[in-house]
Length: 376
Image 1 (cartoon, rainbow, N blue to C red):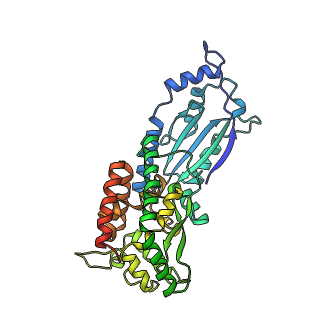
Image 2: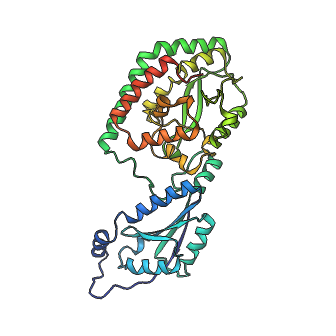
């Protein structure tokens, strides 16, 4: 939960330095603003993920109305360091923002520390923003079914360092590929729509809210494979056990040949069973790709109630990249891979994706679909 306050820290210009903030900014950018604090933030976030502990941040940002005055940010940093704990990490985020990392500290604790930095001065000099990871993210999921864009103040990961040109090419491939898929497979989609409509009551297209990049919800399209108005409790319980790693409950195969997917789901129609096994039910997602909500290749988009059960490190699969129709998990693991390993495959893709890798995954997907490997 994001919380902003204001406080005043008085400072004076050091001898020999002009009262020009722009002059000081140049010095600050060149001398003090480097990657140290951001790298520390990433390291602490990874540690929090491994230990399942909470990480909080306080950002102290120079108010706009004071930007015309000289502010000695070194003095501010010195004052801040005296007021925080020795285990906290403090540094420059940019020329007008100081960040304080608070390991093993929840949102309530962050607010208490923030309160120590605030005094009763009537002319605020800095705004103080507190945010916690991952508690605010999970709270946002539970309340709204999405992740608010402000739950963490700035990006935590550097894995997606592709140039804008590569991202533009990926989007171009998505547009061309989705149009090609829609045109070529339109006869299959029309036959499927007719089969669904004539064998069970209800809409042809099943619409569902899923979470895309940064946890932003979007309407996800599939051919309807289930009877309408069926309770989803069976799936909720299976997802809960899957993410918890309770293999005894979730393994629908055996020890030597595990299968981590619901086999006997009573909600599925006869036509639905066929289109699921052949992956035909996924074809309407080409329209999601064309709209820019998904990519041809990427992590799978989860339901909100799935993401609520995630551990902190699981969130990387939805925070950093657009979801895809297919992905590394689908071609290398699919139903034979347990939850944590499937997330690791998604993260591996996020860390090392390239257009060539996307092409290889798309070609492998054709083989997986034709052989119905891992489908049910």
